[in-house]
Image (tube, rainbow, N blue to C red; front, side, top):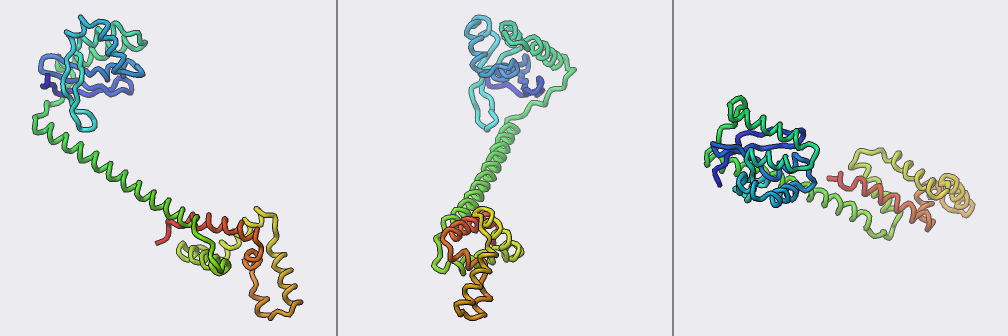
Length: 264
């Protein structure tokens, strides 16, 4: 049977149910019957009931070709009203009686004209609907692919930052990197530096200001130029301490990774 038309869609609770007609009788699919009866494997469950009562249900069922949500046509087992009633009678599910009554009322209303059925679609309309469905699926697929590409690009950018080799002039390169990120993202250079320094102190238990003061005093006493001593920074202290340098390098790399994908 290939002349079934979808004439009504309703919900039994939260379960979508489609009603098909051949102009004489009304049908529902095996899967939707099973879902409405709350079987965990709806198709298998109804198939087992059918096999146990084959003599009865063979008369009230037919295999037809219906369009699925993926736009493809599949062989689908459907049952008419008597078939649905028979399945509910043999089902042990608690909601079987309620579903049987609900289905009977829907089909009764369709037959009496109390429930308005959809206008049957022409072959051209069916083809157009299938084409529109495929277009929508393609659009969603393309959107998902673009999102995946964007995510991969962001991930690659972050990994590149984290995997970057340590430069020879670490102090100058680190300072330039922090300034560049601040400039691109409109961040306060001084506030960012202060936050990074405080994170380092918290993680290592060090006090950069005291260490910087002591280093300046040492260099003054050693006869270094006053301008050189004056230009010493906390970054200088970090650059000349292997443990602090390694810890701060990790902090700066995480900071760079955070902003890597916002740069243009």
